[in-house]
Amino acid sequence: MKEKNSPSAVLSQTNLSEANQASTEDVQRHWQGVVKRRSFLKGLGIAGATLSASAILGAKGNAETTRSSSTLSKGDAALLRFAAAAELIEADLWQQYNELGGVQGGNPAYIAALSNLDGDMPQYIADNTDDELSHAAFLNAYLISKGAEPVDLDAFRTLPSSQATGAKNIGRLTNLLNLNVDLSWYTRYRSTRNPDFGAHLKGPFTIENEPAIPLNDSDTPPNQAQPVPPATPQQARMQAIANTAGFHFAFIEQGGASLYPTLAFKATDLEVLRILISIGGVEIDHFGLWHDKAGNAVAQPLAGVVDPKTGLTFPDLNARNSELDQTNLILPEPCEFISKNLPACSVIRPTLTQNGGAVATIKAFTDDLLFLGQSSAFFSVVNKLAIEADSVRRGL
Ligand SMILES: [Fe+2]
Image (cartoon, rainbow, N blue to C red):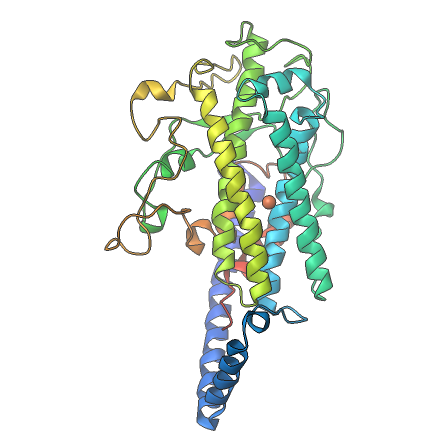
């Protein structure tokens, strides 16, 4: 089922556009308030005095300028709260991958199929899971330490688990059983064009309505061998599922790679900026790793796998002889950045709020069908957190 047909998604989009409008009005009201206050202070000669005091404090050295205040501004708290929500969502999906395909995972055939992409895949899956859990726990603990409200999405852990050997039978926030994986990032990082300048780049092929984890043991027996190339329909099915996971890992982490810069340049407190840049750097590290591994599903000797149930085909992208497809071009191509009058620059892209911010992240995850089956209450909560984060303006 496509996201556009999902009642909850339609509801969420309606709420979103209303909320976006409300949020624009909020921002305008807030901005008018700021302008009035600045004019008032200038009239009293206080603005200049405040500036001089700040300059004197700054001149005392880095210890002063990087010192954090004991409480968070409303804006900084909103940035960290959305980051915490995103990390809880990421942690939930990574835990599902880890139970089945991690180094301690419980589904040998899935582990073998993932290992056909790279022998270290199970270790990387376990470590990525640990990273997301640590991000979520740290962000919530930091919010609490500053007297701010943490994020709790436990009420929405209602989605079904895989029935395959290895998966725990518990409620989930995210659904990995039927995904549409947007592969535009693959082309975007090989292109000189940037979505922040209006580029619309398509992925090299399409993954629609495909599981990224095994569904059950009759669909994919947990102890079957996974030769390259797969010899039986069930082996091909499991390899297609593992390949889908490989591309999904990169999709998720490139989302984080764009999200954190958009949050960071709204931060006021230097310690909040430090947190956002430091966690964001790890998301980028994850993306680079998964970008490399996903390419192995569409390069020889593994390329050519066809899922017998869905018809999904993993083509040989190197056979196209195009730099937009070549699998080892995993380092970002220099692209448009800041101004078309400036030279191309190798950067994370996009980093404009409307393309890579909090609302854009939730929309991308929704389009991915990651939240298939979630309640309208869930969409209301995460979209509210997203709008609050995207509405923050740096308070300097
Ligand atoms: Fe993370």
